[in-house]
Length: 259
Image (cartoon, rainbow, N blue to C red; front, side, top):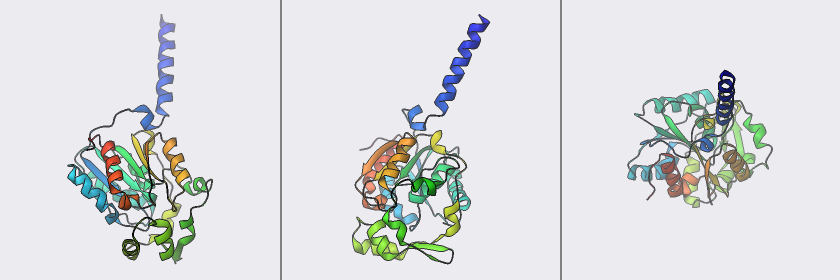
């Protein structure tokens, strides 16, 4: 009998260990109900890029907060998100656009975080060299438009209008270009030390017309994490051009009904 018990225990332990290696969405068919949403912006933007999404989340009764990403170093950017997460009073959906997928992947380990949403975002594994991963896919056009003034980087106007905000009216895109926040070169060298998507329910919005991150790279990362995925016919700035679709995906991640 003792041998049977040990064998049963060994099989069960192996099954549990194997399950722990599966992406979060593959291990959980449901998500915790959350009333809080924390949103993080990426490069060439600021927290206001979430305004249209926030208005819709608030109308649905959710408490939404946008983090002002300092765009300095990855540890400082993660810390800025963690401070906001610590102020939340319960389960919280953490949302990241573009570069801030790096932040979501790391800061998403915070105990308040119940689910993750990636919007046309980087989604590295722990310790992964994202730049090397991205090079396995065709280089998106916006990459050629990054210019540096010393250690500060920004996107040129032509690249911003054509490759970053290509589906927005030109007048609106020019306003966004005028207020873009430069990023520090060191920010691009950071690597995540853990991957929250391996242990928490994850969602991904692919921008099919993206010229800043290759759409096939977005699909690869979404599939790898086992995320519930939607595809939006949008430029990289889907939170601005398609706020309804993005808000509905966030509501799903919060376990809220979508009207």
